[in-house]
Length: 139
Image (cartoon, rainbow, N blue to C red):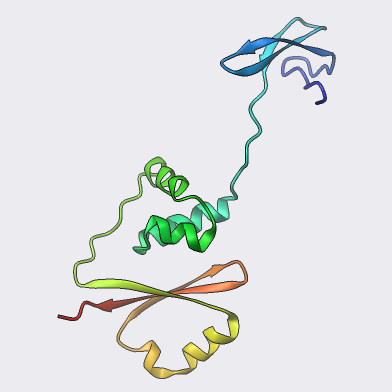
């Protein structure tokens, strides 16, 4: 691991100087400033955060979002808490979804019966598309 730059003077002449809160502490040899470096973790692209929250708002469960996007359902729950997302009340409608490639999506929209009497949204999922359709509950 290369020695990090001092945040105070940008000097690269730094040495390890203990551990604070389970994080390595460094000291700059030039200005004697002590500092820690942020942990480098596995970052998740904002694309997946936004898609996960969109799917949650559309009524897709945490586990289904995990299967669709490959992102932990716990991460999705944490994002919902962090951004204080509330699912709108939907009493008489429920969403159904399909994962389609470009050709299948074109064929779906070519059939007139598929586009009448229901609300729909299409969202991109990498090289595929998710079509979410709201249908009335049938008694």
